[in-house]
Image (cartoon, rainbow, N blue to C red):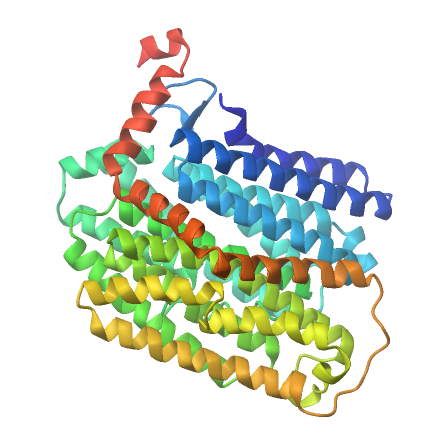
Length: 504
């Protein structure tokens, strides 16, 4: 077994166990929480470097050959998502030192955060459709606990809405997996791809629609997104930040994986539908953001809006479009996590998230204002920041395919996004007023993660060439279905012990 493939799952698991054992020492828990997140980030970076050098990596749990064993698979998209998840986890673990109260620490904030990271990375690395369901349930349970931790009324209401809709999604997902297994006799995604190609027809399209709805709920696409703005603004801001950065992206990743690998038999229908969903998701999300006056709600609706861009590239299904989607996901995870972190800093300085009660941050804390401005302008797609290049690739792909309506929609939504960010800037940072709170404690832990993420946003913009090359190679792998199938079925068999291969 390739240890690099399982380390992004084992490291957060081991960290969570160590944190539970250190429950009686809050100081030790904090050090373990940050240290474990740092080791996780290093393991994720090593995995990405290995996939870049060697191509698709495959490991079989227990040595059983594919498709009978449980496969762990890392192509460039999966490895990149693991790096982004680990980076987000590290930023939030450090930020939590300054923002999570002792009560939530005592009740398991740090171990549950690492269980969440384990579930997210497991979902990215699994090569088995049923185990994708299992990892979704792991992260769902962990996210529900993080949402409800503290037991405040608003939190519990948000947690109930969140878990109810996601349980519906899980039920649909499991139903689709059961039908898929009954029709094909396999759960390995590479084997599924080969068998679905051999038996296209109405059943494959029906299953595609079931998976679209199930993953669409988790990704918060139109019209299935209403649970997100009803819940993401309720927990502590550190929890909101990790949710905003990662959870919907697991749904987007699942959509990209199954609609590039499994369900490509009728792209004229399935991907055309995804294109319409993409445009409607952009529009409804940005209009919802424009109507809000709470910073967290504005940012929550913008999560919805930006999901539309990510699945736009999937709908177009060209190398440039998929590269644009991969680039956009990487950009958005960094930017959206940071915007929530900055919102928490503003809350510590002014005591509120409501725009009418904010003001004067630029006059008293120009550095904090700059930390907001970088991700806000990037979200809107202002050059030379990362969001500009992500949107440019998608717009170019749309123009190449003659999809002028979705291109016009994407550009119009960018302008409305800029309007929303300008509104937050004018009300919270530029106008006079706002009640000054006492200086927050642990300023390094509060400001450091946001400053690091802002620097990464600028670096992605200025170094767009290498990042886009990574995205392009990831897109090429996604479109090379035969290469993925060979890597899993042939390499998985070679890596299995002889006695297991004989049974195959």
